[in-house]
Amino acid sequence: MTRDELKEITLKFTDAFNRDDLDGVMAWFAEDAVYDEFHGARHEGKDAIRAAFEPMFAGKFGKVRFEEEDLFLAAEDGKAMISWSCVLTTPERSSAWRGLDLLHVEGGRIVAKHTYAKTARPLFEARAA
Image: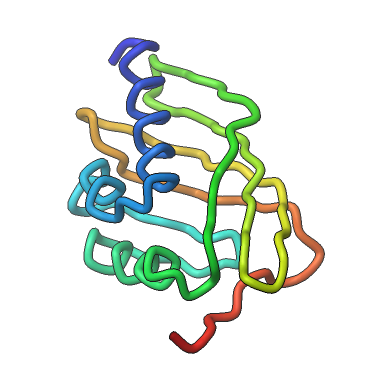
């Protein structure tokens, strides 16, 4: 994989989140991918990963957007690190926190997504629809 290919995968994957495109996000994952959330939950396989993302894409937490801050690419290893500021907007308020995703890519698909966030307290609590 070239550096440009890894960059394209990483940026298109992140853009799918900002377009509220769950199918677009899931298209980048390998069938046996692993997703580690920043609070410790681990999801294995595309079905489990989709289930973990569904509340966010359904708007249960408000509107979520990721603003890219930095990008590191190790194409020879198929690894990317994208740091971001996540902006959460609800009818009551807007807040933001910083974090990053470590992505492991094989064969053009994400096989692992490890998310880390810089926050003093849990951020999400699903709201009734």
